[in-house]
Length: 170
Image (cartoon, rainbow, N blue to C red; front, side):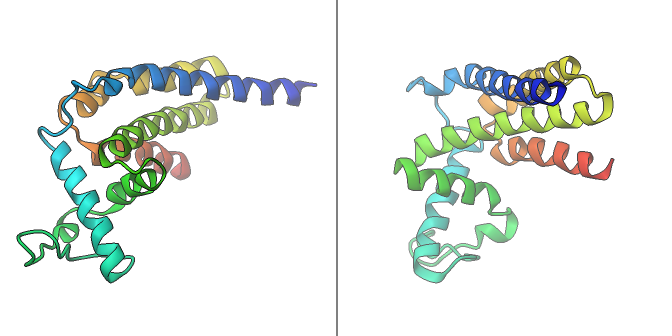
């Protein structure tokens, strides 16, 4: 009986974290939100170029041949392509780079809250504190600044991997 209640509690916590993450991402749904400033245009252009390079050259594109008037540019040598691959995977579903960017950011935000929940639950064995930690982690001003002001998608992805790596170490 206790195991069933614990499983239900995990499901409820996950749904709450998804709901809070979606609420925090509501401003992204507004068409007036400009995700092209700061790093946003860079990520969308890299996803576009990486997808074009994958279709031309293979799975690990180091040179995006369509950039710089056909001369190519090795953008993925300077920045890891993981965030580009995430946008591309979502783009395959919705067929729009801008929507894919926004959905991937929302997914990364929710995953960071879930991993923080798992991390804190592993330490405290307390569902309430783990849920609170996950919600607070997603809504920290630094996290939201990266989401809405800087469009720093790599940093948002790092929030997910950061808690995952710490959890594995402990």
